[in-house]
Length: 161
Image (tube, rainbow, N blue to C red; front, side, top):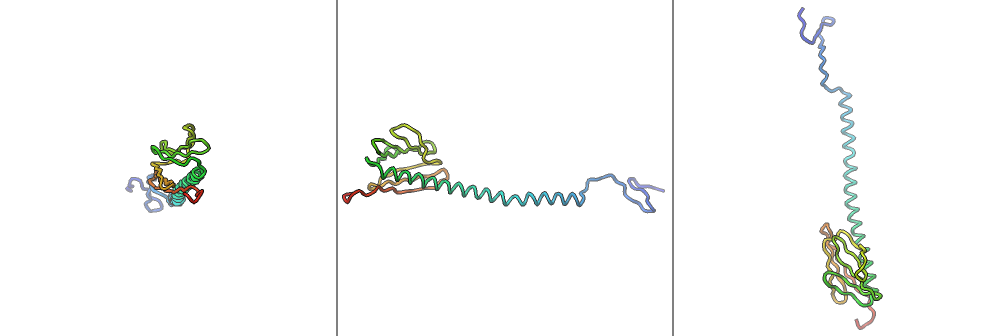
C-alpha cells in the first residue's frame, strides 16, 4: 500500500499526522481577545485623566492670578506714597519702604527696597502696568497666551479726589 508523507492508515481511513502546530486554538483566541478588551477599557480612563489634569491646571492658574491681584490690591490701597510705573516695574511706597513688582524670567517677583526675591506669579510671558486716573491697570499674558486684565482703584479718602 502506498502511504503519503505525513499520513497513516487508521481503521481504514487516512489521518493527517502532521507536526505543524502554527495555528491558533480557541483558547489562544479567547486569551488574546481578553487582553485586547482589557487594554481598550483602560483608554477612556486615561483620556479622562488627561482632560481633567489640563482643566485643573487652568483652574490653578486662574486662582493664582486672583490671589496675586488681591494681594496687590491690598498693597496699593494701603500705600502711603502712591504708586509709580517706571521701566516696566510697578513701585508702591508703603511704611517708608519701596516695594517693586517686576518681571523676572517667566515670573513676577516682589522686592522690598531692592532686596529680596518673592515670586508672586508664575508662567508669565509679559506683564504691563499702566496708570489711568489714579487707578492701575495690569495686563498679563501667560505662557499659554491667555490674557488677564485687572483694574485696581485706591480707596477714596475724600471728596477732593
